[in-house]
Amino acid sequence: MSDIVIKAEHLGKRYVIGHQTAGGTTFREALVRNVRELWNKTRDLARGKPIIQGDRQEEVWALKDVGFEIKRGEAVGIIGRNGAGKSTLLKILSRITEPTEGRVTIRGRVAGLLEVGTGFHSELTGRENIYLNGTILGMTRAEIRKKFDEIVAFAEVEKYIDTPVKRYSSGMYVRLGFAVAAHRDPDILLVDEVLAVGDAQFYTKCTNKMNEIREKGTTILLVSHNMWLIQTVCERVFLIDEGRILRVGDPFPVIQDYYGLQEQAAEKDSLEEEKAVVIGFAEVRDPNGNPVKETLPDGGLVIAALYQCRQEGFRGHFFLRVTTPDGFPLYTAYSKPRTFTSGRGATEAFIPSFSLLEGEYRIWVGVCGLDKEKEKVSERMLKIDVLADPGYPDPKFGKFFNKVIWKDDGVG
Image (tube, rainbow, N blue to C red; front, side):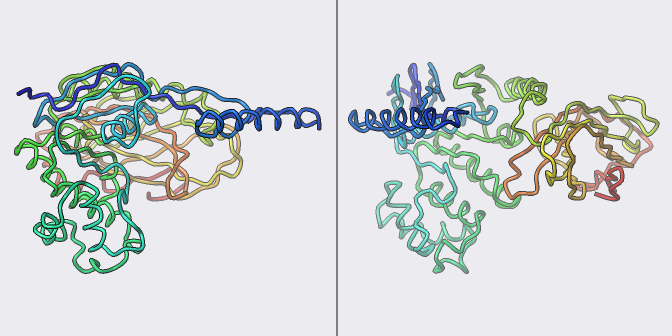
């Protein structure tokens, strides 16, 4: 019997999106546009196609000519920029949507956690949703009853198990959803970025659980922007960009290619008009203002950046995020909220002590909005090497910085 449990051949997914023609303020132009849109809707309805809003249509390929094989018990990471096609691929594998072309063969029971609250009914309690979601995933009532206590304990929702899930936080949703999916004993487990809303303790618990079920023979496909998680769980990684698989291989080299794509995308930020504020240039300097690429653990650093604001009155923060080369987050600091004015500007953040162990680190400097989802984000990635200093004591975990001071902002 073959060990191949997932095989994709020339897989493609096409979407049709609508656009409203810009301009046209006269009565004649508006009438022509509305008639064209009505005709398109009538034609699609007659042909049994989904109705697309707008008088002009465009085809977009979310996936194009994708092919791969995945063996039983293998843990595969899927990485790529937003919009690359990662989630579309998981939706095809979980049979939520059908491919436009090509085929995929799957052998075994599939369980997936693709969105917060997938398979939950908001008016039902946590207890009722365990039975509902478990049934959707193919579990019998006897199986659910047998594993019910384990699921509740793993999700840490004992106190709220008889409360309607519409009152749950997004973190509680994910804990319960992952617990049901993981305890189904699936042959294939699909996990999208939803684990990002969980806390650090549950994140670690999920990582351990994925490693545990993988050792029992479960195949795992994991989509994540957390490169530390990808390296911890996965033994092979797919890098997807613009709907195509660019590279397949061991985690570390593929992740380096991913960071290369991120840097290329950052170079194009200045051309993206939809961003309210764009970071155009950034560099690491010593306290005297000289550009540097390395520092001692107790050496102070200045992160300087130039930006352009295209939206008068935009409210947001500057931020610094420090990670290891494989994406493990170490520290994040935000400036105070501020109102941006149109035009160009500059910001500086002073780090009095960059007390990290010897090695290479990445510093991300950027700006984000005050809205909950922080949609309007622009950032630049910088690299810094921390040199060995025999006279400096090893820093304690979590003591990487004593403070970050933003110019004209005080302590962040």
